[in-house]
Image 1 (tube, rainbow, N blue to C red):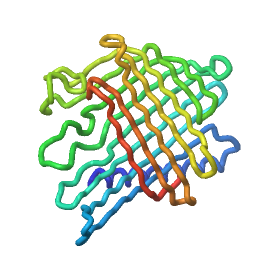
Image 2: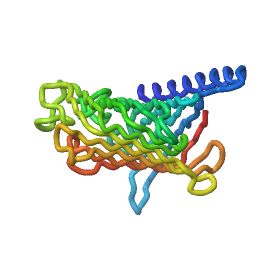
Image 3: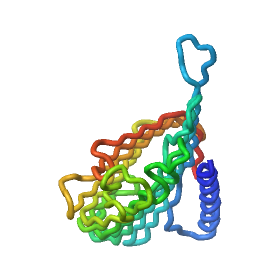
Length: 284
């Protein structure tokens, strides 16, 4: 619950900062900053009482922020995306469980080379807010355990804010965990038992594409690929997210979020996550 309150407070702070930015823009002839995002609240609820066909009462809710801060001035481009979401599910007679938990910041700085190409440098950071909620013991994950940090130079191909690809053939990746957690096996997200960090060196590709399928229906695609030169480079880490938003009006929409991850250091197989519901949106 504290994490949900924190996420809500952060959303209010983003709105305040945006309002200040709008005020500054009105006092200047030209603004090189383009800022905007969406605050989303999804709620799903079902209730059964003496229902012969069967069913279990449940309620779930998800708070999310998807915010972009982009800068363009002459030959310089700087794109930032912040994604934060947290959701819980409560099924009757069961402990409360997480249904979503994500915090990610992606930043790419570019200096124009030629045409749509830029010399670039990127930073990607991602983790989650909290550990599992369904027991009194610590779960396999918590804030900054694991935490992922990638950084490196490369080349950015950018047609516009909605279509861009960053290629970094020489990049570093740091994985951070709490070494005091009980490990499920000899390695914990690739980190050796008894240690708290793992360093990788390899190639990274990040792609972003957002477009309108039709009026009031938009699809956002975020893809990240990584190959570790130092160990099993053929095992490419995959992280793909699709956000489909079907707007009913300015404040109400149906949202489908789908994410799939392949990282053999965490799990030898595909991880998938899907969140669907009727939500309240606030653009800021």
